[in-house]
Length: 59
Image (cartoon, rainbow, N blue to C red; front, top):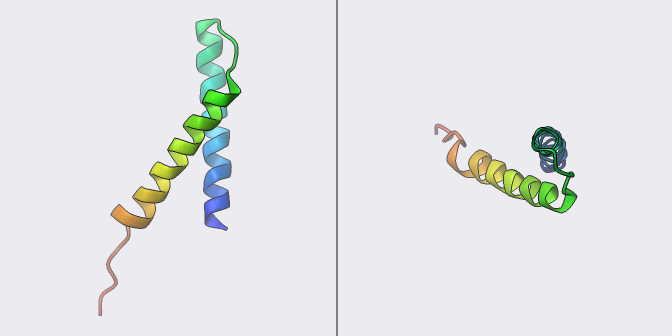
């Protein structure tokens, strides 16, 4: 479930960011590039959250 929520928010945030930046540049919105960036952003979050920031359980 947390992976789906992460993907949803990554797509939403990347879409808004891409829309704003393309509007400021006066160009059209490229949905393929937006979804590619969302996928890269999601993978980065998965790696960061599951690998690098996971707390070690004390025994």
